[in-house]
Amino acid sequence: MLSRECSNNVAKYQALILEFEVAKELDIPQLKVYRDSQLVINQLMGEYDVKKPKFIPYHGYANILLQSIDKVSIKHVPSKMNKRADALAGLASSIAYPGKEVTIPVCEKWAAPLIF
Image (tube, rainbow, N blue to C red):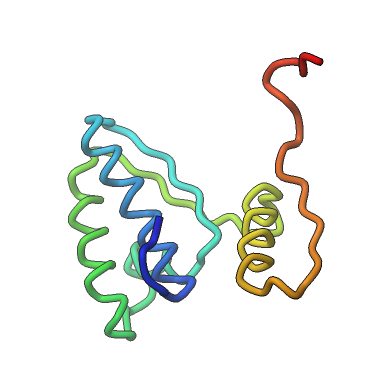
């Protein structure tokens, strides 16, 4: 959980860093990462320069963690192609703007049957 306000891309860097930290702590040698932030992915892959000063520390730390994992595959998945991520983003925006009415399916199916 983020304890202070931040931009969408800072939150995406935070999530990516957390994933890398967990992979490092669990000594996971191979990691497949799918993200909807084209900016963050391209910055991490060195295709885009990191121009905003607020992204520099996140980018630097993510790169340090990235080097501690033997094999990492990072792919961009547009949010419209990831229905769960799109639903969570919609849920987050409805919380941020409580006057807006939004219907979001969060659970597609139950892992176990419901008991009445």
